[in-house]
Image (cartoon, rainbow, N blue to C red):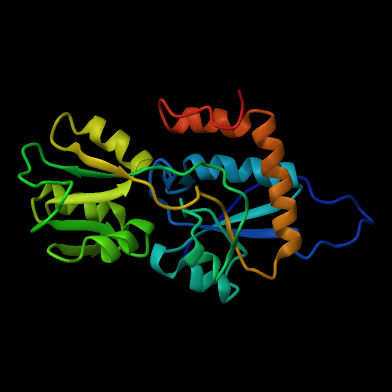
Length: 250
């Protein structure tokens, strides 16, 4: 596991009461552009990295970024390996049974299907298709609950592996976050296209926390509220997701 130190924020004033989460470790996947990815220097970059830095600065926290595989992200946070996660994770009732979330910093994002042009499937009544999803995602849960009958659900550890198998013809379609798929479809120059109807799942994207860390949650929510109000969140969304927003300011 690679640690990347983040010089994010001023420390609390001398003599102030110690805050248990003054030094906060944030986990991210580093494999889900433009939410989070590794830049040419091998360092975390993307929308959530920029936003996380801004949240830490606004909240007066010193933060450290930690890379972690998607599938073990929640268990490792619960085990104490880090304090919060920012990894394009949608807020769902199922996840809230185990962890808590901050308020969302990205509104509910429609999930979309993509396929090669000319895919011979009725996407309104999908049958006989090999459907690729990233394991542990809201799309994987939706596909297993709603599309498993008559289709084959193929789970991948990362979104990149999912996309590679679609391009190779090993699966017929992918169901994933629209904001993740948009730039890929654009860059593909017609090799893949959106198909079928959008699927609305989840309550937006937020930072995951342990349920007992109520003081940290309060500080983060206060910071996110301020960054929404001053336009920072919408500015970063516009920077990283072309054509998206504004969502939180008029």
